[in-house]
Length: 397
Ligand code: ADP
Ligand code: MN
Ligand code: MN
Ligand code: MN
Image (tube, rainbow, N blue to C red; front, side, top):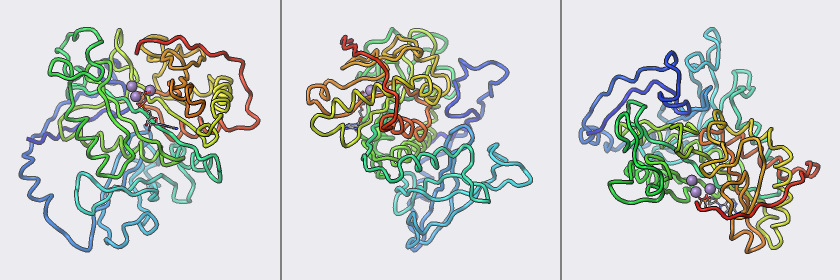
């Protein structure tokens, strides 16, 4: 059975458990439909035309979409038409001048409508052609424009699955707690792995779409998972992350499961959810690159507070200095140290070149803002170099 649920709360918002009563939208309706019946229609062939699902980003950084038919021979990013949506329904435009213009930026295969049908990533503009204030992609494109640094990003997206009540994480007893963390990370077995079907379906769907999905694993808190996008070059990292989040939401919709990117969905002795941002430039990847990496890290340290402010809502609930995080107010870095703000991977230290891992961004971060900011700070020739020393104490992770 395919379960289609009408969700009312935002993807990026805290789950019901950590929101105040007055803000809590009550999740009620669940409509069940027969997936086998739907398949009869989904497999009907059509020629000369494809369905183009235009994906756009709303005022909360959440992904939404609408579909239109286009000629097969015009289904490329250069030929696809701009379109619009009702911005008064997304709090991105006033009712009397409600159109938000969306411009196609990247095209992927649509895993939900197999065949030649496509997902179209767009960004948002006023009718006058100005990027909306919520269009963080436009400044990110500017940041990467003309660079010869060849910036690579690998983004580790963690997420948490909840029953449709938005209160109980998948696999948790209603109103209670599972056994303490330990067996769940990369765990196998019905007593420790909850939601693998979603992780698997999402992985395959991302591969079908053509995303650079690097892998996936079960996380430390039961019901929590991770996948990685990358390495991707420049703006492509943000684009692919947004599409992968859209695919995640659609897969979860099919399974009747609620997914949240909240950075600390369960308060207490449970790991939060981050979006570790792995970054390198060509100089860092070449022999002797470690010196460049440490220089970049010290520039990141000098702008710690500014970065924290750009790294996602609610991150202060996650960056406590416990559960493989560094304290939000203290910058630190070290080799293989998961209690640091920035980790230098062991292999990078051994090879003398490679990449750095910024562990601070939260799972609900805006990947355009984060990638552009990491790039700008690390490659700024005039950037202030902070006075920090390595703390290489290895921690069990
Ligand atoms: P962790 O050990 O922190 O769990 P993961 O394996 O989950 O790391 O993720 C590492 C990510 O970094 C992957 O997406 C990988 O493709 C990416 N990556 C690998 N090499 C580089 C590099 N040189 N620059 C940027 N990203 C990289
Ligand atoms: Mn990882
Ligand atoms: Mn992880
Ligand atoms: Mn990591």
